[in-house]
Length: 55
Image (cartoon, rainbow, N blue to C red):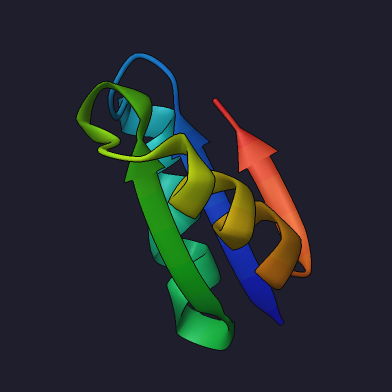
């Protein structure tokens, strides 16, 4: 499964722990909103992943 984690305010201890667990069994991509260059690429990422989690 492909999982996209979108971090609104940067990583937290909880988000980091959960992301690391997901990486053990899934393909994971992490995006920090403050570092997004193009919202078009973010929308593409959202539609290309099976699950999207926003923190």
